[in-house]
Image (cartoon, rainbow, N blue to C red):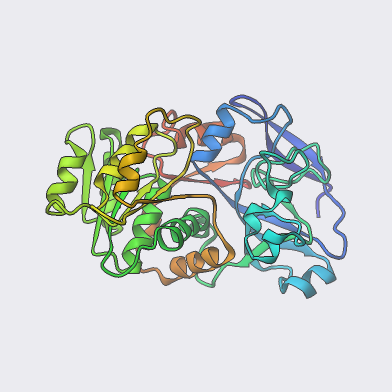
Length: 369
């Protein structure tokens, strides 16, 4: 094995450097993963442009790789051996707190980078924290005893497995949080990788009607949404989206509204509130806005709307997402549109944000290319 590891490091706003780190020692209860694919999503775009910290960070939190070296205790505890193709969640929890015992480790203080300066989360933690390899934009990633690891099913390529994070969010947000099921009517706002994943999961769950909204620049994504199961797509720049939704639903509105616009302001939330059925609908929001002046609280209460926050995913959601990928029921290869090498991290992130290579939906960073 080599003595050093190459990584693309965010060193400032919209600035990346290729740096070299020492190959870490692997204790008995840890492992080292050779990266195959790191997915790039809208969160990466935001964190790259406006870093939450001045520390250098190896980004990359949607990580697929092969166990290159595993300590005996790591293998005994977790059931993973050298050579296994795995997906590693970005949460690194303590395993001791109330949230961890409830199986909701995504809420654990040990992985809460917003409030805990010592938190460990792949793609967010400072590269100055030994053993440095805390992100997927690198040749190798370090796996401590408390890393959350999943087997990638046979027949699923590393590139397709790179979709598991948005797909798991699809399961968590639409099924577990939104309650989408057989005969549900659903509004999905935004046809990015999150919105397209919601489309697949809602279709798999038996939704009777799926409406996806987008803007004119998303024409290619709207076409993919139709191939993945959307019944209608609405260009909000060419049509009145609320009028069209009411026309499609014969004035009834939808059961569930899913905001996948990555913080596009108050307009999608207001549309979701209006588009929900007269009583008892559910809206799931990502909560990117710091302020919401004149929030329509009266309308929310009169319509008996349930508001839920979309915050990551659970272990079960990841397992169901991997099973969905393995089923090959949907043409999900249409979502994994572009590949980039390690030296092209800057271009890859900008492309996902709509400022580089055109028509990127989900970018796959291949660190060895």
